[in-house]
Image (tube, rainbow, N blue to C red; front, side, top):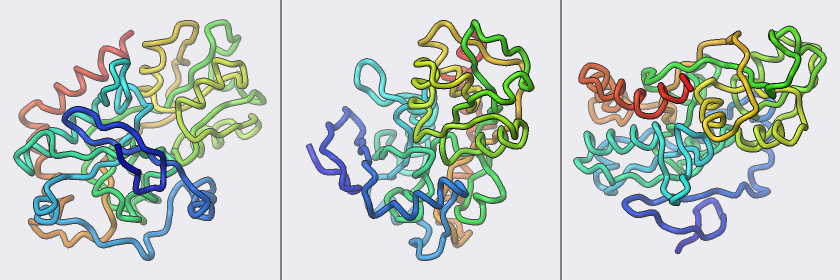
Length: 288
């Protein structure tokens, strides 16, 4: 057992991996307010970007991932951390460090991803993070490794058949995501309630605290694989290209972590690794 560097409670160690779970304290209050308003944090004062030599010397790659976003990062019923982003980081560790289990996983939320990067708590974030011009001002992104689509889920007995049917209704969303801005532009007269995580938002939908929830279709598919009584509207609001996030200001040298990750992702695209990860974690759920 150990203490989280975020000042959180002690949690257990998973076999073959290290995981850490944050509890956000008062010291982050001002930063979280910025995230609620903008979804990003300024890069001013952030630590320098990480090199591969630094990671190798340390002996591990520290990755920020989600623990509640099936099928990307989630704690399964056996207590093991699993998902697309988990397997992706382990594969990158194998290719860069020569060992698949050389990753320490730290929990991040959509609203704390940029904090984790710029505070130096993690080397990279793999947490369903959409590449946007606004975010690219405060973090550096890898090339895209998967493209999702923003969708809306409603109870099966909802009268809503189209997005326009939800105008004036209560829509649930996750703080710090692109989904918030997109849905508010499309439905300016709807009522909105934000949550720290997709799990909290979906739990609220199940409890009847909203008429609909919006997030990426890939994340919704994870909830629907475990829950009956919900359906997804046919209309998609946007394309959401996922990228790994790194601290701003990499040297763009061969030793830069982002440079080597991009090289590995290109090889993984060509050799079919990314397609296999998508087939394993995403395709089956989207069809179900």
